[in-house]
Image 1 (cartoon, rainbow, N blue to C red):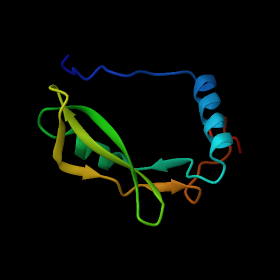
Image 2 (image 1 turned 180 degrees about the vertical axis):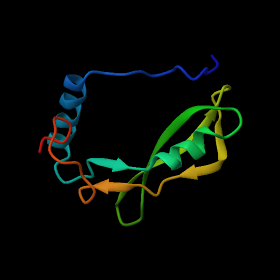
Image 3 (image 1 turned 120 degrees about the vertical axis):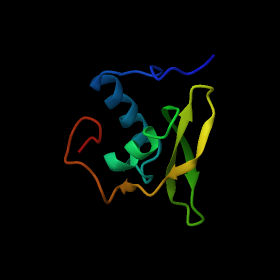
Image 4 (image 1 turned 45 degrees about the vertical axis):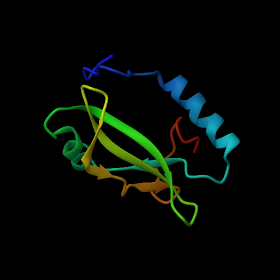
Amino acid sequence: MAFNGTEGGAITLTEAAAMTACYRKLHPNETEAHFMGKNNFLTLLNQTGCVGIRTYYGEKPDGGKELIFVGVDANENDMLEVIMDLNLPCPSYCSTGNPLNGR
């Protein structure tokens, strides 16, 4: 199967809120979310041949959780020229209260 850029899709706020609530219950002291600016995603997406973004889970030596983002081509391969991870974690950089964060 080749990727065409339409993979994945939207879910409802109710579905997303249930999943984030479950995660918080199972992992009460863990990072809840990450923020990365639009320009970084555009840098990945604007690579020639990029049809989407793949996310990897990572962990730093101090135990801090990270999300690592790479562009992906139509052949389902990671594009390794640009790799992003310097995102801002929540807690610390959290949204005001809403159904996704339970605040």
